[in-house]
Amino acid sequence: IAGITQAPTSQILAAGRRMTLRCTQDMRHNAMYWYRQDLGLGLRLIHYSNTAGTTGKGEVPDGYSVSRANTDDFPLTLASAVPSQTSVYFCASSASGDTDTQYFGPGTRLTVL
Amino acid sequence: GQNIDQPTEMTATEGAIVQINCTYQTSGFNGLFWYQQHAGEAPTFLSYNVLDGLEEKGRFSSFLSRSKGYSYLLLKELQMKDSASYLCAVRESNYQLIWGAGTKLIIKP
Image (tube, rainbow over all chains, first blue to last red; front, side, top):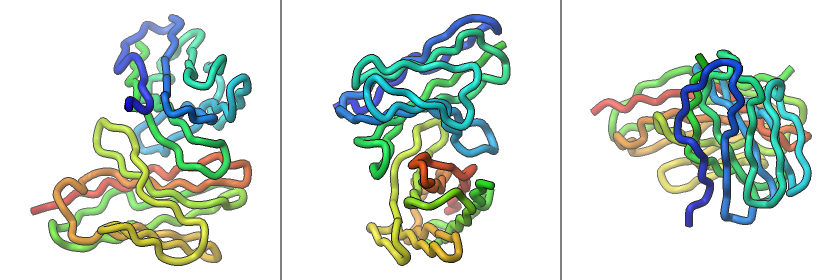
């Protein structure tokens, strides 16, 4: 059982480039989330999806977009990366969007130069 | 506004007991979570409280007082592997989680 996988594990990216972070889960969870984690700050929600075909904005959505074409995949795209998007990105999923525990992927460490 | 406060860092001795506090001010309340995060790894679920009182799970217990906006995580019989960050998160009325910055726990022999 893989749970949640993320790719790549780490990436160094030039500012202005487009980048897609991948997230796949095999638990048939309805809800999925993208967070960023920065030193000294709590996890901050970027975007979420309560079910396939729907997405919503979190606390810090600017500069990011997501799609949820099916239950398993929830890619996060940076259209034009900026240095302030340097962070560790975690994808998470839960059985439903309201009452269930969130389970996290291993994370992607992104550096934008 | 939304705010979750935890101590930045704590130090404890192997075999001892440590209590990590979390206070919160959020838009509504639908439960409080504690997660453990080892350096360079993903957060992993430890406990969930939605009603007042103590929830015990092996060496770990979590307490909640909704009227005081307060929770703590109690770790007993500390082991070196318990060295990690402990994250407090509150589920708000919109069911989104608001996260504290985490408490780094250092265990010394």
